[in-house]
Length: 34
Image (cartoon, rainbow, N blue to C red; front, side, top):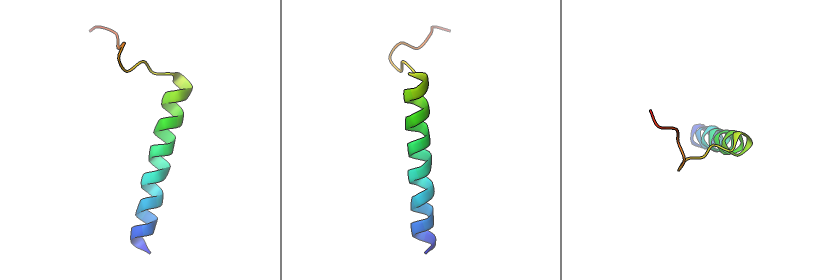
């Protein structure tokens, strides 16, 4: 039960990061120079 719950949390965060990065269209290979 705990393992499946943890997997749901991992999937949720992975989905959240993917949606946010696609929404903001973060250019990973064109990061601004510091």
